[in-house]
Length: 204
Picture 1 (cartoon, rainbow, N blue to C red):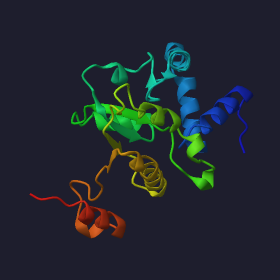
Picture 2 (cartoon, rainbow, N blue to C red):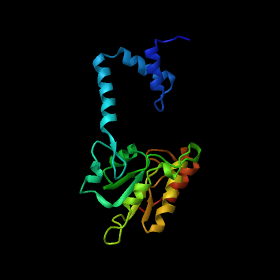
Picture 3 (cartoon, rainbow, N blue to C red):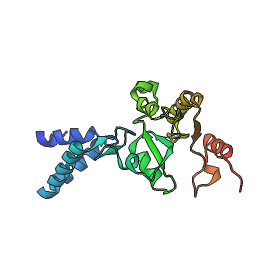
């Protein structure tokens, strides 16, 4: 097996630590950087350094931001009576792209997974409960909580846990609809997807 110079091996090893990057992909990234002009490599280094120095978690919703609170929590035009709970910051971006949702967000930074040792304590649930506390009038500003966790085993477990935790407190709990994606064929749908599509049917 060909041995690379130690700095190249270190770079490949660091790329391999990234999610979804295997050995061959790490090699390609490393050699791309080696061939790239110095200023391109410097821009990458500067971007990594800047994101580590300037990006923080919003103290309200846990979103990634360079100002606290984040722009969603600070906006006076967002509907504060609705909170959409998502697993990761990139899920929030996907919802915003629709331009249909105008409420608040809450980012859990994960989903329940006993296999991976992720329980309720590892998720950002504590400050969600703080956001739901009654104000001076004795009522919470929040009326509805939308559970927008991923439609997989871990996401469903997280949604069920939050529903059992929060519904007794009097909040309206809703779950994003799931089913067949636009442009797909029924013959390729699995049983779970078809079940969700039928369950979440609506009048036309």
